[in-house]
Structures are given as structure tokens and as C-alpha cells.
Image (cartoon, rainbow, N blue to C red; front, side):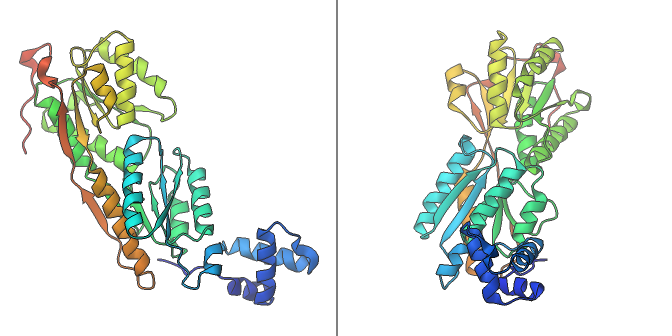
Length: 356
């Protein structure tokens, strides 16, 4: 349930002082001036009440009678990641057509950085936020949403939060990308994922498990979890997999696929001769290496368009916000090169077809 935004009138009532005094204290505090000229104890009480009530000043609203700045914030996990960079560019282009300016930020999967970015954007008077949640930031996102600022979640979701979201059908994508390997006779398929409780990652893992189970390969289900900032751990994973006769990998993200591909070549092996690969999103590096890769193509433009349109809808109906909407996009499987060029070592050990 949303709660209304805390105002200086609320602080004045709680502290037992006038609204003008609260305004003076908060304004001078924001400007770095000495607020204790009026009365040290009173000023301190006002500041303590403001902190306890989680007061967030909207600087832009002070100068705009409408309370709108036609500015939105977009917070992604890594703006240098091609997937998020392409979506950000799409949002920016579409926002311009709607006469909105976009502020961008990256969290690097750090919940404290996300919370700080939300606070900074909020204080600049943005009209709404598009956020890619990171692990550990659920409560911070809920707190900002309770300040009646429109929020749309992108790519990932916050469990139990009544917020609009635009996501991929990640479970279906996980099934189909694994299926692309099973259909070619690979039976010893393992997955490389992140040690994160992110909704999209867990759903992709579930898709892998379901596909393997449907193919009768339950005993060979294995997911390797790597920490997002310790990807060098991929080398022992690849070497161990080679020793155990693993034929193919499903990588949960594009970054993991590139890291795995590099490790495979660094150890003197090749794709698809030694390992077949399936992953999310394509990359020019795959072509440089001359590899055969099956990948999930995510609808970048639709991600950006749906997220922005949802946010604008919430902004324009802020007084009577529409019910949260969940938009689920359909993945597309694309095969690059001829992944069937290298057959599994044992033709008799093929998996059974997967029912559709």
C-alpha cells in the first residue's frame, strides 16, 4: 500500500514548530549553511524529525508549479553491458519524442549504490524511475515506491512488490535454449550461472532444469554458480567439465558466455569441436572466434518501448495511478554458425525428443 509523501507541514506538526521555520532549517541545511542561528535545540529537533519521517525534498517541485520536471531516471546494473546500453539508448530516443529528459545510472550490482542513485534522482525532482533491481535492494525500492513516485521494473522483478514490470519469459527462454542443444543430440549439458537470487537468473535456471528433465537427463543436471566479480572461477569449471566429458554449456548471460568462451580457447579447446555453447544475446566476439553459438535474442526495442510507455502512463495518472502491469516478452532462439558441425562423441547416447 502506498503512503503519501512526507511534507514540511508534517515535520512542523511533529516537531511543534511553524512551517516557515522548518522550511528555513531544511533549505539552509541543504545549502550547507549554519541552521543553528535560530535555536540549536529546535533546529536539531527538526532535523531529527525529518530523518525519522524519511523526508525527501523535491527541489524541482519548488520551482515548477506543476510539480513535474519531464525528467525520468533510468538505473541499470551496468551501462557498459551491450544489452542494457541498447535498451537505455532506445528509452532515451523514445523519451525525447515524448519531450522527456533521461538521467542514467549504473549500480554495478551494488544495492547501496542503487539506493544512493534513487535518492539523488528523487531529490532532482524526477517524475518517475525505470529500475533494473539488484540483489539486496528490494526494501530500498519499496521505500521509494511508497513516496508515490512512479516506478517500472525492467528485466528483473521484486518479489511481492506491487510495481509494474517488463520482463522476458526467462523460463521459456531457458527451456528453448537448452532444447536447441538437446535437439542436436547433446546429452551431457551443464549450465554456468551467477550466485545471485535475481528473478531472471533463477527463471533461466529453472528452464534449463525443466528441459533436461523432459529429455530424461535429470541425472546430468548441474549448475555452476559464479560470483559476478570473480569470473576467473570459470577456468577450473571448464577444465573439470572437460575431464568429465561435458559436451555443451548453457550460459545464463552474455557476459558469462564471453568469459567461458575465452576460458575454452585459453585452455586450447574449440567451439563447437570440444564444447557446444548456448547463451543469452549475441556478441561480435562470437564471430571473431569463428564459433557456433545458439543464443536467445531478447527484444531490445520492445523492452525500452514497453517500459517507457508504462512509466509515462503512471506519471500522467499520478493522482489516480493505474493498477501495476506485468508485461512478459517472448524470447527468440537464433543459431549462429552450424552448431551441428560437431556431433557428440557417442551417437547412441542421444536424448529423447522433448514434447512441445
